Image (tube, rainbow, N blue to C red; front, top):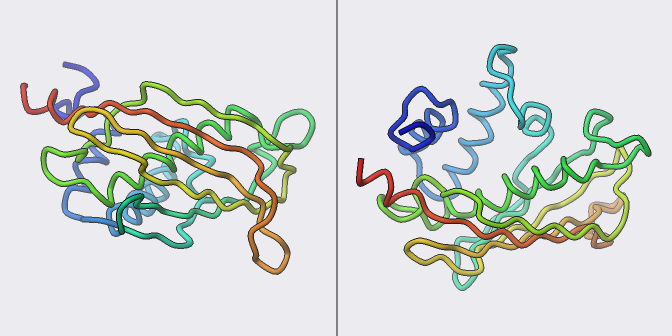
Length: 185
């Protein structure tokens, strides 16, 4: 079945399979590293190609009740709309990827090991984010059951002295697990 974790020809599935050797934050770090290397090959460019090189992990916590990862992203001209601000679609893509990665903090075989698929992604844009801005994206697991999870993200400006700045955008992300589907094939 195309698009399932069993289909080894799909690049995303190949990446997820490569991540199986890691656990916790190492899995999220490996995702960013492998993705950055993969995207250097022009034949393997895809939606995240222009985002991953500008994304890094600042901190994380695997502790309940809400495991989280804080990312830093630097907005480049390629990420902008016609007004010189972070494009809304690009912000949504960043939230989609970043809110998913904290699932690696709780995943285990048969439980969110493939990080699922999006059911809902609701992004609220509060302020423009100009090119050249550094933002921190705090992403947390609110709840993860056997088949569904709820994730949340906040995008905040980083001040010149590295402190937390204004809240720029927020995200609610609902996902469905694909682990059960993979086990049935």
